[in-house]
Length: 600
Image (cartoon, rainbow, N blue to C red; front, side):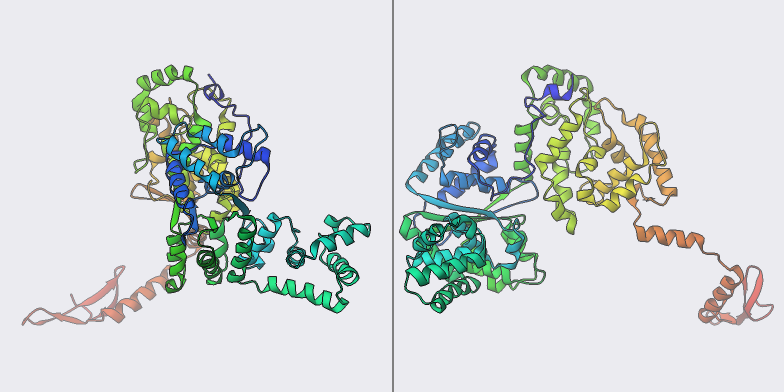
């Protein structure tokens, strides 16, 4: 039986690489809600969020959603947005009604449904966007970015300067007249609103011809509006937002994806995190719960502050405002991947039961990393995770979190669910027994995670090819182990991680692994010490080569040794206690080099 025939899902279906908070489409919304897995962790986070959101008056207006790469934090934030807006979906039911169908596995579904029903009395407008998606946002303050997206949501232009002019004109009751003038002049208003210069030109004409402004007054009016945006403060932003809530009677909710990466993107600069605090404080003090702020970050709020050289004394209000902190851990990702991708057909259960009964010792051994990770010890373990080992679901998040530098951020695009899905697609036509190996993991992460230099080096070692093990297989495994603290790189562990079938025998493969390691050690790819295998860095490899190519002048070496020794031990006689002095003479390679002749 092939792997794809064991799975309940059609493995050929596409899985979105990234769920972004800023993408909004009713068909997409319906699909994302219908596919959402409400894990036990998500259930707890939903309860915490809904309990806080029901409060009519509070200064705890912030929600901080954290989680490592692929943890589902953006997806969760987007689901919250869907629940708050409650659109009617293409199939004719509301977002809340569809989401309630996803609660069947919850421990307390009726409690959550009751909290969701309570949202019916809180009309909300939701503004969702990803802070890092638009490069122009990196040049704007947080308050400008939020205001820009707010204006877009209200129907103004997506070009900030045009939008702020439209907003100012509307505030004074002039926008409709300007719009009519532009359209009556034979122009398409939507196109004009995409060009700052054109919009300003038409607006000045409309204001002078129909609104009793002089040309200078009209120009100054529009210039003043743009200046207000350029100098927008958190307090003024909050006032604009409150004006909206008073006019519409709706609560205003901003969901900002990847705020954590944005606030730390300027090294040794705390302006952005202080600006975030300023916005949260303004929303809290002025809005008292009518304006809410939900953000996502790869780091927990406390960790983000502690791991940076920020003045902690200045950031006390930030932690107060973001009292609701929801962290998505590897446990959540594990459950989502199992429920969404690895569920097996009921008729496959006897196969797993028979296989585990007859091969339990071998299967458990192959899944044992001699560390703190889980092993496959029962039929349920095998059936739940197959074709993966349980430890691999712990290993991948640890690998990414322990990897420093730019590769960490590159990895955020390689979502956990996508990795699992891509590996399944690669193995779908393999016969039952095939298991995910370390080479499968390395290939799935690829150059976008490890870097092109590493992958080039790895495949450059393939001059050595054994029957079942290539030199590159060893290097792939070592590059995975390199950034893991919970597994040691021994011959035994490497052999187990390279096994590609649950029926493989470790003792049959370990000889090939040792031979490949011998080759890699001679070729200066690895070193061995006390049973641990370590990758040789480029610098170490160059040093070893230089040492081996260095020609040593033996006479000069000996001359230098003599000189150094005589500087330290230039004794000509020695005496023990009160005894007589005894002459001594120094020799090197049977040749006298100092002391007294004919001495001891």
